[in-house]
Amino acid sequence: MFVPVAFMPGIAGKFFREFGWTAATAVMFSLLVARLLTPMMAAYLLKPHEDHPEETALMKRYLRWVDAALRHRWRTLGAATALFIASLALIPFIPTTFIPVSDQGRSMLSLELPPGTPVEQTTRVAERARAMLAGIPELHQVFTQVGSVPDLGDPAKTGGADARKAVLTLDWGKADDRDRSQKALEQDVRARLANLPGARISFVSSEPGEQLMLVLAGDDPVKLDAAAAAVERDLRRIQGLGSVSSSASLLRPELQIVPDAARAAELGVSTAAIAEAARVATAGDYTQRLAKLNLPDRQIPIRVGFDREALRDPATLSRLQVQGKHGPVPLEAVADLQPGSGPSVISRYKRQRNITLTAELSGRPLGEVMAEVEQLPSVRQVPAGVAFINTGDAEIFVELFTGFLMAMAAGIACVYMVLLLLFKHPMQPLTILTAIPLCAGGAFGALLISQNMLSLPALIGLLMLIGIATKNSILLVDYAVMAEDEHGMNQHDALVDACRKRARPVIMTTIAMGAGMLPLALGFSGDSSFRAPMAWAVIGGLITSTALSLLVIPAAYTVLHDIGDWLASRFARRAQAPA
Image 1 (tube, helix red, strand yellow):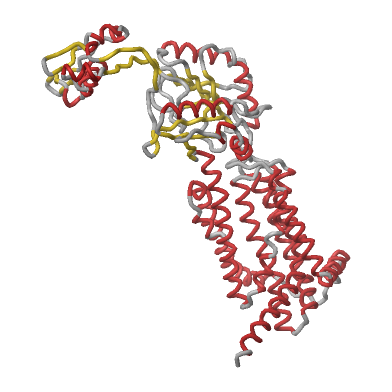
Image 2 (spheres, one colour):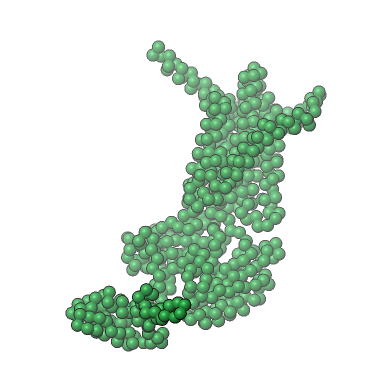
């Protein structure tokens, strides 16, 4: 069951790979212990009992239920099927996300000032923001980075050095030592900095499941900018989201040089010559083409360019000399200089321009927000030539559930083939696999009651459930087959005897697994946001799977056995007809 999980593709597969191999290895060692160590310990530690204790009142009542389920087997299977359908109906009511939001004890606050802001002013604004947050009692310390900010995967907030950006790392301490959660503290920070002038405030995070990223791509920059602005406007209307930012929302002021094609051709000035002259005057020449100052131990490139203050005057650039076919000519003779604005960096994906929109989820489920985004008018009616690209958590979210379904189907197929080799009957493995749907009701119900999301750890719990439910079902079916073949019992008595002698081991397995998961579900130590959904899914699924499989599996055994005999007789008659 667990080996196919280790081969899940995509980013989600990196989370499941260790789980799959660890679980498969642990089960393999458990097999060795059960076949080697346990018999040796039983031979020395267990003592024979001559008197057989009488069946308890609970066991007698359970056996009466088993007898009733066998006599009304179709009703039993019908009720189990209805319960499974009702369990699937719970899924739309359970929020879905990639990874649950965790309390890391720190937040990274991004401050973004208007283009052209000098680093001195950015420092003053960051210091003012730090002073405004000093009154929060849970705040232990603040670490400020101005200009050089870390790259956390969001091109709209972080990345390379930029004098107008700053990041404040807020240390909240351990979650057990404070009364408010990290999300509540971040809401307090937004309220305190709402009046900070000239700064765009947002939180950045490297943790998955906390941001929604949308990427629009296209070749027409005008259509792309218009579509991105419309989507950004609609995203701000979704309730519960934090700050919404765009990698193209702020443009830098620039001086645009527009060549006059006719005049440049007349004077023999090429566009490349205009660009070369402007680049050398503003940024300097390439390093390998610069003159060098020779020192005894090294060479220092000499770069010549305009003074920074001179670049603020367009008249200075207009007098820049450009090489023509009859000699140098001023730049203003072959081009127009006009103020404008534009992006400092043009990002591309598959040779197409793209714009990234980022929205803080603020604790909202990713699946729920994605469903609302898909219904936005600007998303449903994007202009021709502009397309959405799945990226970030949204892409991993889709990969997670599709990969999980593929891995689960492959695991069930592997289990069926192994059981087919064991029982040598095509229907008995299906009887054992009947226990798998019985887990759904308890797992989904526990997630809904405990208000946990259907996420990566919950899917891990569902995979664990499949293995445990299959093992419990094998205990019943294997003993019933043994009673029929070796002890000559009829089918009804063999199933009742199997339930009598295997109900206790099945219940013991459930209690042991549930007791192991209970501390994780209740969060007795550390941040249980990642482990709690897995634990609740396992506990809920174990309860319904154990309670129902002890009644449903015997009824399914008789029905599928009869269907197998009927199919075998039909094929036998068809094979004998030509003869």
